[in-house]
Image (cartoon, rainbow, N blue to C red; front, side, top):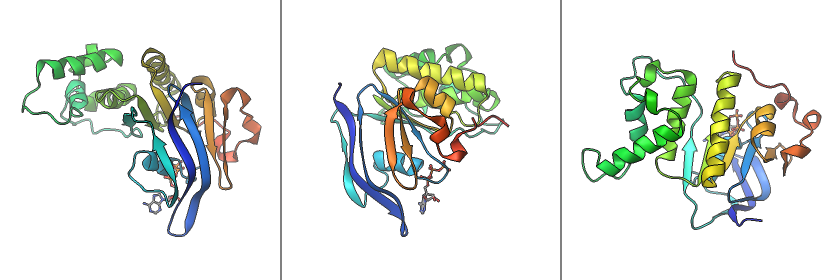
Length: 233
Ligand SMILES: Nc1ncnc2c1ncn2[C@@H]1O[C@H](COP(=O)(O)OP(=O)(O)OP(=O)(O)O)[C@@H](O)[C@H]1O
């Protein structure tokens, strides 16, 4: 069993008197692919914020392995067709801490590498505003990959994509997992995607939680809101 890259111990947290988790404990092995599932409002995004250090636990602790480097792919939001940047320039926005006002050779090579890895290289000069939903989502993924994370949180990253595009994105995420040993935490409502593309699931409910292999997932026992696959409107 690989070392845990993240351990949550006895976590308690809530907002204004409403407790979201009480005594939540689990650990994620380096290189594991986990879906984080649960009904609307149960606290999935809040848990990702606690992991990213944007919120502080009321009790308990979150232990990160020293080598952990987090990347975050946000929920897909459509982008104005007039958005002025190309896919390439959008991805390069995440090149933080540049000392020079222009991109060095190495920085350009790093952008090219992530564009290639996400299959966007040929379309790099396409405007982001006019790109397809799948290309936009891959651009967010490429942007997150630019900082070379070894732990990627995808927050409902596929929610408004069509089935083929969701499958393509998750196939790419699985390839990154296999090639680089990337640990993945995939926040989703989609049980089919969780079963097909993740090894285990962390289910949050109002009364507790469970972390199990997706092979053992019993869809009929899942919270009602999760059972039908959410489809694209
Ligand atoms: N900053 C905040 N202040 C107060 N309440 C908050 C705050 N952020 C979230 N909440 C509440 O905490 C609960 C959990 O929110 P969270 O976004 O983590 O749920 P979620 O499981 O990700 O939901 P969804 O599936 O709808 O995205 C919700 O009731 C939400 O309204």
